[in-house]
Image (tube, rainbow over all chains, first blue to last red; front, side, top):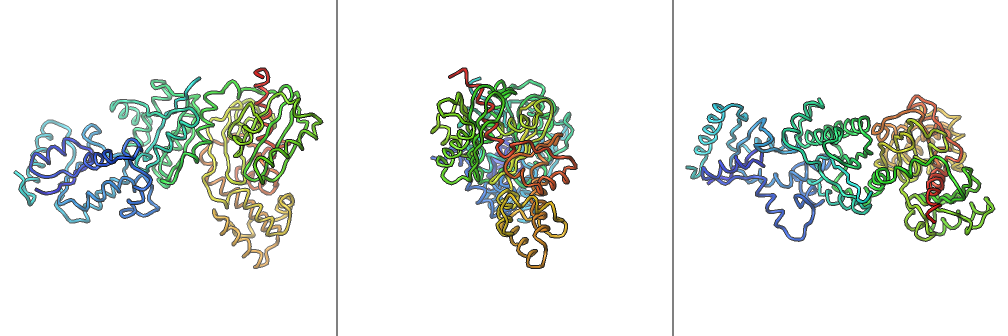
Length: 149
Length: 411
């Protein structure tokens, strides 16, 4: 089983696909769930405190906007952990969406720097493309070292 | 109106850990922030129709929400636009949305760029102004002072008091702020003495400025109000520009305010946000270093040429360093004074005035409006004749005295 970073990290469909093929998806739901379950923090909706953008300094300098650094405090550790990644470009909002374009650029750059297997796919717009889309993800996940089935 | 509903259009506050601070600031003025509820379809169409092709989905969402507010499909009393400090993409959206809402609706709107250090305290005055505009339109519509009223402005540098009777200023008091309550008591005594009236005769009292709550509670004020609405009201009143558009600029000791006013009511405004190199405090330090009283700095600057001395630091320490270097290199005090005025005006122009729509007349108020060199520099930058009304240094106190007369019949 490999740890697979998914992009958009909020995509439940992608997360489910990765899990179905026997790998561990690294998704926002995981990180956010952990945050919400942390007792004593009240900052809605993600329970991020002003300390989190400071943790994000590991991935982006202080001159980078706090929203980017706050996001990186969640996604940065996931990128470090990732053994593979599936990146969907131009995804529909309903498929999964990440709010900040600058964070998204940084996430993709840091993933590529890791030199791990990465699958880049365009979001499908037709049924045929949809079938090819799922097939391509399945093939990629099966070829990742680990016990994908 | 009970609880004011402020629609939040934003990108990044929850990830910066400041969403709670925004909510707290709103709660402290009996308001609530909410996120306009729209569908995915609305996001696509709202964003496409607006025509600004941004990349960040949260900014697309903010655009779609702004359209829903302007079109009236979502109801709100005011709008708060907040995006990350230092994000160029967000700055463009913030600016365009503020302008779009201001031009196409009657909703008061304020925009703010935050960092993770932004606190509820920083946002309080802005939220208070937003809720005042939403809640007290009738009060802000007042154009004539009636009866015998007192206004007190407890500012960060100076404390001012004004006594007004039947639409005339009859007493003034002005002192540097030392103890907040002591300074307020002293300026009230000065104003009452000049007016020749006793405290008991005063029919209504209003307070504004940083010390407004403390002073207001102590002296039993009828109106305790932030300086954004009070100053803009006082400015258009004194400049006899209560109808139509105007722009009010107040370069204060601790922060600066730029307010776009329509019919005496603020539409958009910015406050503070830059360093002390662009504040009245820097001009005080300049006067001190030049060995002149602050009242002499303006006339001195009028005799100088700002272009002769390089000076444009945001930081008061580095600004003073430029000043010392210029004097050591043989620059004249006149040129240095002019450069200091230009430096402050230029930074307010670059950092703050870009966030409000400048409409004539441009009215400068507050103590710094008496520094002619600063007014000239601002006029040069804005390419307009700046209006400095009489009693401009008492602006908050005048606004308070004017607005508090709306409370006379309540007593």
